[in-house]
Amino acid sequence: MKPVKKLPYLKTVQTYNVDALTEDGELYTAEKRTQIVVEDDKGFMLMCNYMFGMINGLESIVDIKVMNWINENLQFNENIVTLNKYWKEKIQAHTGYSIAAIDRSIGTLAKKGYLVKDITCKRCAIYNVNPTYIWHGDREKRSGMLKWVLELQQFNRMPDKERQREEDIKRAAEYSRRGNAPDQETADNMQDDLTNEEVEIYMDEENGELRTKG
Image 1 (cartoon, rainbow, N blue to C red):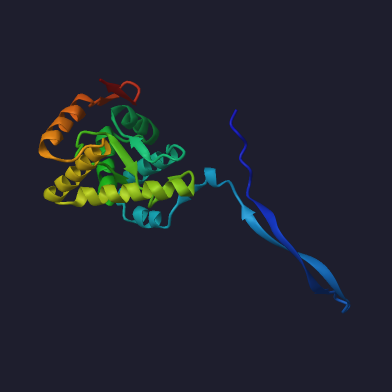
Image 2: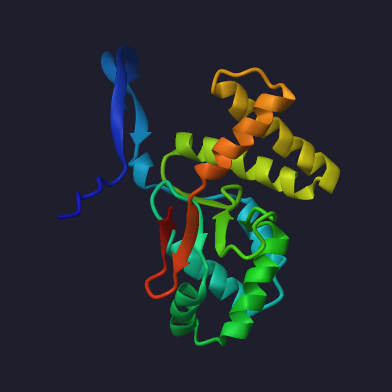
């Protein structure tokens, strides 16, 4: 059974005495309260002001409807969406638009920065919904995911040489984490180790779930 969410309410955080005056001019001491609004932050759907600029910049109603479907299907504290054939058919059933039109909208939303993916995985159907525009979950969790997405966007915009350098840095850091010095001979050994540990990730088109091999 789903837990019942509390409606926002006022919580008293301080009480103190102040002077009060009746209509008849009688002065007396009254208790005054300082209150704050308490709401269920964990279930709060954050739609930032930037979203309105995003919507105004879209020229197609298809783009808006695809974006709305994604917004409505975001998981709690998650910004990952899979837009493979299985899920495109779900969007098609919801909006009535063709798969080709939905594909164009996904491309538009990616160009606008609402959807962000790692460009080194061109065939991946997995996108990050940019928390700059919308987030469903804890505010603290959003901060970390926003940083991740901004870093991914920065990485995607880098020239090939800089991107390769970043990959090299990560590789050296992984090697160092294993407690070895980054000399060439051991780096070659490390690459062999990493290759042996690779796990293939693939998408089950039938039910839209991620699965692994290896």
